[in-house]
Image (cartoon, rainbow, N blue to C red; front, side, top):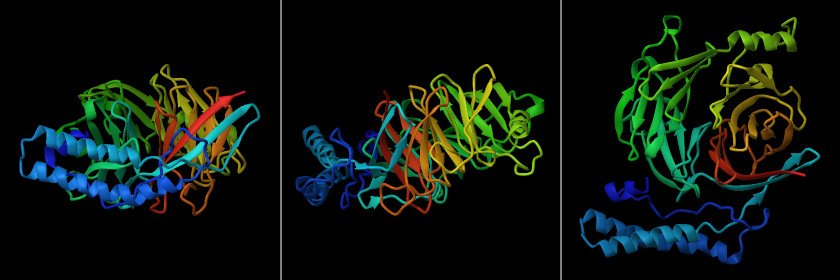
Amino acid sequence: MMGFYAHTGNIPNMNRNIPNIFNDAEVGWRCSARQTCFLWLVPLMMGMARRLLKNVLMKNLCSIKLFSAATLMYYCLILLSTQAVAIEVQKSERAGAKLQVGFLYMLANFSGPIPSQWARIDYDQQNNEIITLNPRSNEVQIFNREGMELYAFGDNGEIVRLRDIAAGDGGTIYGLSMNFRDNGIQVFNYRGEPEPSVFLKEFPAEWANFYADRMEYQDDKFYLLDSKAMLFAVVSTDGTFMQMHDVGKRLWAVVEEKDPEKKKITEIDISGFNIDNQGNLYFTSPLISSAFRLSLDGTLIPFGRSGSGPGKFGVVSGIAVDERGNIYVADRLRSVVMIFDPDFIFQGEFGYRGGREEDMLVPDDLVVDQQGDRIFVSQAANKGVGAYRVILTTR
């Protein structure tokens, strides 16, 4: 996606602040005086690189050496600007587990952190890029691994309204249309240019009214959720029906166990939704204070208990799974992210409702960088998307 600049000349404004970036130093250190100077000097130097790149692109100069030098200067300066270390985050852990958590940065451009309210987020594991959808502006934004915006599209009305996004292969971005029945799944190439949409086909008649409002993509398959009907559909990249999971009755069975007289729970819902690298589905249901794993064979396993202490569910929302099978569950009410092992045993949690940059404000969607122990958390109150480094070990 970095090639986007070379094709379009759409180079971001460099006259901006630099976000704090985590390195391998001990969690909790603050910026040194030298690093603080970068916050003033690097943007000025980046402005020079930007102007040079624009001159090369806009005047169609053919000097490969000049263009290469300007490009190298630009990205070297970005690397120089990423030397601030993480800030320690409030956390708790169970006996036998060691949890290290550091706040890295908020997703930003060179004007500073980008505000958004419960943005939908995904991580492109192939290109190490974060993709976000701002529901209010309908803008899709792509960030590098250091949290800096690379480019954006959609805020000027050139695409249909979207509900959700997913990273595809080769830089492709998929957008789940708000009007799903008429517009299906929107497809964009690595430049953000639209390609032919995907529509459902060969669906059994009994599920003809399926209406997706959440989406994940993995291994040439779309995993779609109709949260109102409690249906999960698996379809191919051309929209052909492959499999359906109807979990509604089984969720009501969980309600029967938790509240036999149905005095407290009168309706159910699905909020967070994700899949692991094996194709198992994970989702949360805040009204019944539970999270679930739906295995490939159709086995549904609930976990979690209602409460206000560590490891307990208040109002659960986003859910994600790392490559080791650890499960991350966001809680809007408690403003924390909880971590469970593959056997659903609570290991620890981090977060605190507060006004500091490292604190959380009603976390929602979650996504994990499988290669770098980073987790990205969308938040409320226009705070945006925060990045945290999480290292969990057991003694």
